[in-house]
Image 1: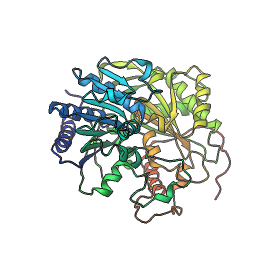
Image 2 (image 1 turned 90 degrees about the vertical axis):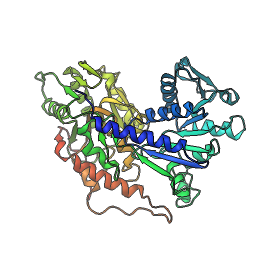
Image 3 (image 1 turned 180 degrees about the vertical axis):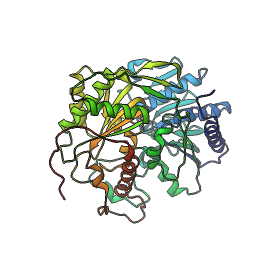
Image 4 (image 1 turned 120 degrees about the vertical axis):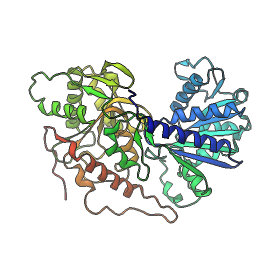
Length: 459
């Protein structure tokens, strides 16, 4: 019996084919948008589109917001399209990782050399720069991966690179940001540089065809009641059937003070979620007590000799420390937690900010909740894209760690937030309501952890 929901997979494949057919049949100056939830197989869809375009003899370019995304696509394209040569156009100081590109990939920082190949991959900034100088030849079709992370400036730079575009992205992930102090002065204007590439198309080309992938391949059915809060109006299902993935923990040995931590791990293994709450209170952003709790959870998880079963293999596989990640909001949280985990021989556990973990997949993820121990909300901490990344990196289980009082921060009347004429989105308000929905969805998974109380919540 197949471990996959064949109907869901077939529906998703049909959407991918329809989107590819639409862009191949599009007239000049037309584009297609494909929106996907976390773990939907966006890279597979991009590679399928490139393969279809090459079968018709078309030259294509693929642009991404980051170098890491470009590297991943070069690998995927080189594997799927082995007879083809893939040009990877990179900056002089950013060659292919470890200088080990696939055999049929051609890394180069010379746009003239890249133009010789029928497939060119690079960051949007690099492609735009080379095209603006006249060094990179125009192509027949442009694919933009992670288009909800690409801002208007990046997209405008490659707009004339090809007459037809396909934009692929995850609407729930982190949006483009700017450190410029006056970035909001542009909000509502047609020239707003912080619009995403998708928003640019919707604003200037409202007839653009859009497709929604109805699948997540990374998450299993247990994850959906929580994760769907990030994708209103976008229904989707898991590719894998319920019960196919299992995480089994060894019987806990008696250990003083570990009962609550074992309860959290057992709940996460069974339900796919656990919301571990330290006592209510206001604490530092890089709270030592939260760090200690996460370290104890992970050390106990490894000690219990967990193994996982999934659709990927018929036999069980040991859960390794490298299969686990911790998502944080701040770099000081990352640094202090990294030091604490290294001190207990958990060097292989990945610790990073949501921005850096975006696009990556792990078997188990611990999410240090962005609102944990705060005395109020702000646009950064209620950014629903950050929380979405944190809660969608796992295949088996996600453990959210925070304070018992965190949900109070998004109860009652939302605070006033700025609005802009001509700009419908309200990031602070949207984030408020998404956090509220996520707390509600996690209500049945709340479990207490021991600890001090911190400072009392100010009213």
